[in-house]
Image (cartoon, rainbow over all chains, first blue to last red; front, side, top):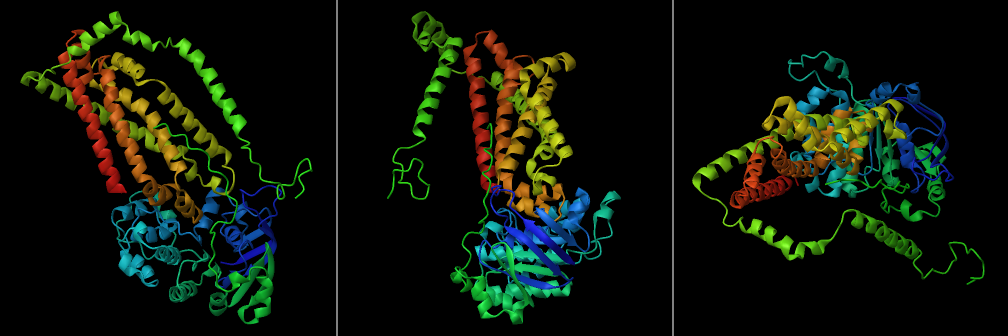
Length: 302
Length: 284
């Protein structure tokens, strides 16, 4: 998927009105199939950038174009269909604790599946082999039928990434010739998976070996499917090693946008000035540094 | 440290040693008591009347009839039959209520709104949600006893009236609380699926339901227990089941029969409690 950001600003919906936007005046062009790492100290606006690209956040100013279309001019149903073509993997893997790994991984396919097929898959997982393949890329195939809450934090993060691979995967020919008799299901089944993969801090809970393996699996899968990949990374070395293009963000603004070879140690020093501990590989501590609106008090009469 | 400034900046101010919330708390506590008093007067709350001898004596006589409970075979067979009918009324009523409550809960749960993912919910879905909420209020604000009196006139005396009455009132309660359980739980998994382009029902089945299954189940079992109690009350207006028999025994001042049936009710509630605990452990 081709991406163009023109002078885009993004602010969190929960942020105070007078607070500066988390991302200001950003312009970017990404070609289809490109692989980009976004680096920068915490609070630089990396997650906000991913949310803008994922149509999870409407730009407060500026224009976003995905494949030449402005998603925010589309109707709601068209926008939702477009969202099926992109996949945002949040830093905290969004996995229900009581779900089994196989189900949670196959959920990555939901946008490309009819409601009927997804209901049937709850009773008996329709493509166990596909889920197993995705998990195997992260060395997790033995956890296929384990429950999510029995996994460690790092395992959960890798399961979340395996789900991203499922979203990328091209849906094969319809399983079994017995298509549902209702014709309405047919048009919903798209034949292709997501073409834009947005991954937020995929390595924050992984040890170096696993992290290496996870990045390789992600970049390789994106390459195979010719999908655009944008990943935010705290591991600068990992970013330089595996991504051809690096975007540095600082205080909500673009610091640099360079091929990995041209990112010199001086530039990194500048980017991380006052945050040098993060440059040296301290893992991110607070997954949500954005202000969170207080949840409304639940009124349960039980 | 300079403290002479009238409004010191929050950064340099010395820590206040008086709890600023104290006055508000005292005020609201007193206001609550002041509001409570007229209500006690209005409801003629005079607990000491309970202990006056000419009130106490007939009450004790009525209670003393309760022992021993009537336990002969014929009566127990009848109680067993009516108990089964009561359970059937409660279960059928609750099942019908679920048919109405589940779609309405899904329609009114905010977490399943796609337009609310990015800011405010769009107008049309917001109106639909509000209408469904109002419908739920209408359904549960009419007590099941009133519905039962209506249906006894429509379908005649018997369990059908009880089933329909429970179905309508309980659909209102279940729909409201289901929607609240769904909205108040952890929503990260659900919004992630919606953001990635899944449909609302898919997001419900793959994220929201597994997230909240235990709580929804335990609430449903608790409502089943309420439906059993409720069917007892409905029996008093002729809607069948154990309640109707209890009404008859009460009218005959037959305390030992009432005692047996109360014991059955306790057993049923205990059973519901066990089932709920067992289901929650299974889903935990």
